[in-house]
Image: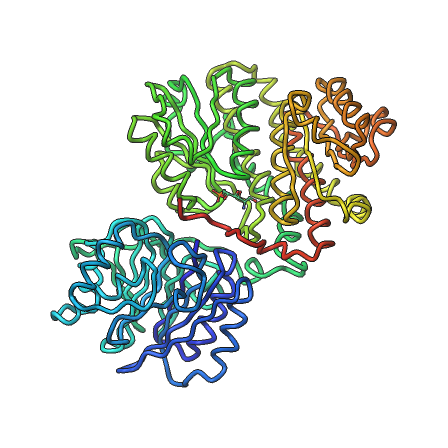
Length: 613
Ligand code: AGP
């Protein structure tokens, strides 16, 4: 939910920190701060100006002192304590020498705070994080070096953290550690970095390393060494990062969201690449589950949040239709609290773009505790979800920076449908010819998506006429239903307008009462098997005064007579249509949001990765 960055040995420490914070803003941003540390001196600046916090911090640092080779920086999305400057990180101990930044939640901070207060510590914030600064202060005073002081402090802490700690009495050292919240270390000659994720230090660091849970890293200008909570040395796994700086920038687009919408053909193509063995078998090199274990699967449960949950809903139709396995989809934050049933042969699939969504991670942990085999669908290599699952399939959508998830959705559907075909292949519920036909259909999706992208002017023309609309319903049937859910989520999260996704057949069971002139109904009508039904739903809402936008295939000759606006897409097998039909809905949300002057990459109240429950 927050972003952290640290650097040791730098000749442009402040510039490094501010650039990194700017790239981390999408992780959360209602306040920001930096601390510069050298022998005997800790200098700090903090701001709390919403989505402008990092820009304000840059101004605040205009008269920062020179000569500091090390420092830490933080962007905050408030969990404990209001989003005000005194709660912004870095936090200091009583001496003002120890500075700490933190992403996560310390669950036992109240008891620790009381204990520390009784020993005379004075707190200047209401955050959970500050307790660690005072714990470290005490341990440093009792003679531990910074590494062991942090290590012993963390032994007292329950909860999630990615932290970085400095102490002006041990200059040019950062001690960083993680539990659940993501953390990477970077190195370049004479300079060492730590950050919540890669983009923050891309272009500066030349090598990247993943930090695992309960690993503590001491960074100095010469490099780093890592230990576990007991102090035993551990080796960090090096990450293969082939992103250039361009990847992390906007690549010539106005914003990350339009760049990532445009990258969807490539995202699907890359996700499907090299997934066939010479003998025709569908393969996932990174999947660490044997064919026999897949054959033993008796039931599938998908758990996810947000956009990833909608991809999971699409997968339900594909897995059931092709492999004849029963599939259940559940909201990750609900799954773990409902005493879920896990029998022998239950496969749980956690779907997550970031692989760091704590709700999804905790759901798969619950499933594992009950004996389920777990597969992660993750867009980030070595993400927490990928590391904790029994097996992983990576989507290859590339870095997704915009808070509104777009290319990850289409890549997730592609990966999940390929997995569905693999299950069908192993269970022989589809003939080889049918497998070939479906795989060929999947491979045509990138071109269909590219065709729809070329029609974005048609969407803009519709959006320009709807800038005064305030109420949207998105409706669909079969796989058009999760497509409608995803279209509604895109619209609401970047325009801040009310939008609901609904199964079209449900309208008459209540929501129809809300339909009146001025309400916009977006109908996904591309499935030929559902066409009659969805047209009658369109007639129902038209009769009550709604304005209808239909997503329809190029071949549909009837839709123009019933819809006010038609957004055309190439026809495909219905099971692949969500990857195609979602594109005009993404573009509609984007165009309306831009027309309304919204910040499409960093919508209010939201963060790219939700690492708090
Ligand atoms: C989607 O546009 C939102 N950003 C949000 O719903 C997101 O999909 C959700 O938080 C899950 O994130 P994940 O895929 O990284 O787990």
